[in-house]
Image (tube, rainbow, N blue to C red):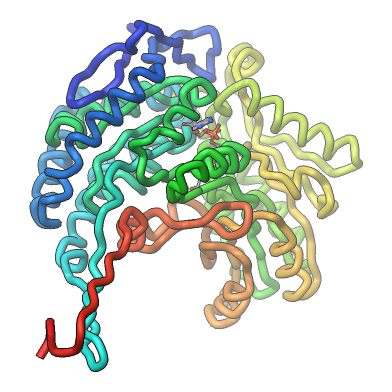
Length: 490
Ligand code: NAD
């Protein structure tokens, strides 16, 4: 059975204006077509923005509590039909490759983000008041109008959840551009959300970013762009947005460092945590650990434990019981990760390809990469310096805190990082010195993300934030209303 998806424009589930579609495939079995995705055109982009613009004044005129009340319906439809939830979970696993347990977590948590953001209504409704003399000033926050949300394929619904409720709660209507990959489960989910809200509040155009990207980002009706994806596309979007000075939030790639200090607690569960840090979604997570620096006194202990843990992974189809690691998303990613591993090997690194492969024929024909450690890697190797976005962990030794911190910070990226120490004060003092938007202590990655806190990168990992209260504020602009003292406040 295959699943076909349409666009969402003004509350309608409709085909692309020229009827165009493209095939969604299963990265575990690249010859398996899962369905057809509507390939939107620039006419569809125009129609989506027209709908969002026309719905914007009424949506912006609602109070925060009224918008929160609309969210109740969204939360309900996301879980109401159990069979449909299961269909979306199965589709996400099939089109992304991630194991079912992870797809279940991702699909089932989207409603939580709406609940969380609805809870900010009181706080959002409170203006900042600056009483005089010399002035009485009120600082209010207003929506931008129409926001464009561009999302990637790796955690397509979790990332939607980091910005869609926030954009809507802030008072914007939206046009969503999901990734070409993992579009089926995203499109079906957005359809549900859009139907639970007034027509035109949520619109979606699927299709090839290269074909319709510029018509989205340069559209005269776009007031704010929130983009999550790769750095080069983010830079391109920023250039496009500069034409109309459209404000952008850029959530880009990273090369997160973990710093395991001499006083780290290394227990059996540490290796599960390290696995969750670097290997879930086959390492294709923006805030995954992508290089691990270990104090020389703990180096062998960490390598031996992680090696044993990764060797227990079962690589295969994420939909099959017992599989713990699925494929990477597509051939380009497969070539990129394997190229970095081959380069490390050619440069004399100790490469350990681990895990078991129950179905060798499947493995040989899909985009599978075994969990891989690159031990005692030279810090200058490409596999250490570049974002691999695959199930590969280079492990580098250091001898002092200063050296570990310097190695971690010596990167053009600054998305997230982690410190591993049994001593909270010591860990915190090192965490404060790391150049990243987020630092985890004794953990790393999406399972440890506090969605109440802002999330965003430093340096080439972007700017602006998603998630939390600050994530709502990112979809608003301030309006300062000032008067002589005594006008507003006594
Ligand atoms: P990508 O850049 O290929 O695509 C991201 C989105 O941009 C897709 O929806 C795509 O269709 C769209 N796009 C492509 N060209 C466009 C254009 N010219 N104009 C407008 N939109 C265009 O990224 P990807 O491969 O989907 O995601 C992987 C990358 O994303 C990694 O680098 C990863 O680290 C990063 N990422 C970052 C975060 C974060 O929060 N910082 C989260 C997830 C992924």
